[in-house]
Length: 100
Image (cartoon, rainbow, N blue to C red; front, side):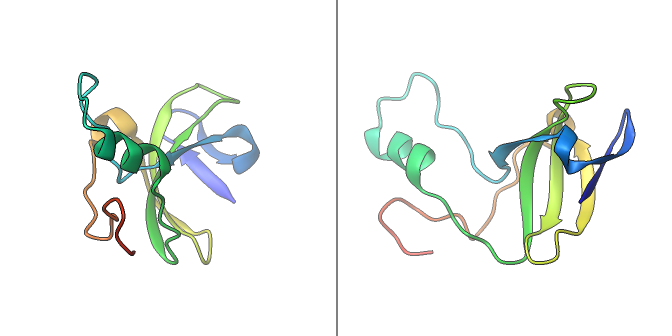
């Protein structure tokens, strides 16, 4: 699988480190809402299809990237700097205790 870094160009996935789901919003650092933190830390979706992820180019420029990738074909459809992409909200995001 190739990911095209905006700085370095196309590179093999072995140069990158997966950082997690790009759809999740972290609770406020001062929050004492245990349900929100539990959901953030433990709830995960196993999406089949287009998925937004965060990757770090750890074997290159070390930039954090927002990557849109199809989890069935591993085709990368978009790459942007994570700082420019912002948080994408997904209607598929599971709430704590609910089904996907």
